[in-house]
Image (cartoon, rainbow, N blue to C red; front, side, top):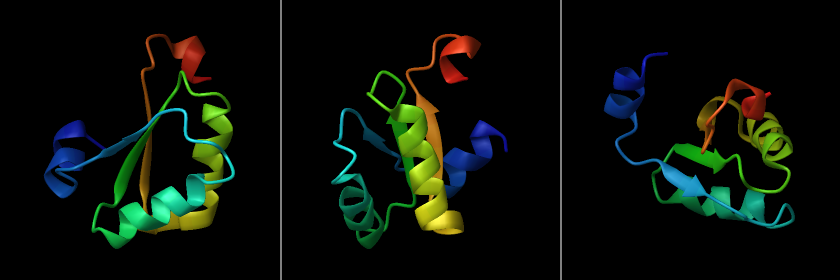
Length: 77
């Protein structure tokens, strides 16, 4: 998906950095309740890749999940 399409469909993207794993789903539920359906997990967050996987599994197509603060391809992997 092109970034232009993402921004057109989701003009507000919540950026989540250093949110504890235990409370992350509750944060995201509140974000969804507020009408925001796109989040970015900062890759400098502890367990960022696991958090992205958790959110994709829990919220499926209701939430667009992206990785932020990704400077290199290796960091994303």
